[in-house]
Length: 166
Image (cartoon, rainbow, N blue to C red):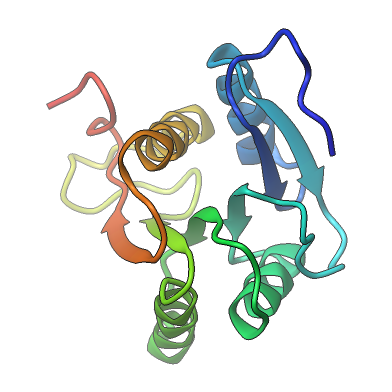
């Protein structure tokens, strides 16, 4: 993994699926001067990663988070992203995994509603990949500027309430 010399931001490794969210996030991070590296196979954690977006609802992301949590690794900035679920056991398991990871790393979790479905509480707003990508990129910027490991935070993304919106 290398960083292009003309870019000013870090290389961000994205553990996901190369879907609409990964494409939107790669575009958004590129606009902000970051290089991206996408991992779509369940190969676990890569020891050279210092900044990551882990899609917990993907096989590669779930495996990467489990590996990062179970091994001693240098401090890493991680934004974990996952669709909300009615399965309380699954949500509790993922939240606990992220909390454990936050014992050694800088972990921010962003929960979001499924794509293309109306969001409760916001006049039925539809979640778009580009809106969530902006919020994830904002979080990466906050981690780079203000936080250091270990830490843990969690929030729920609401469409229309990302950077530049009330």
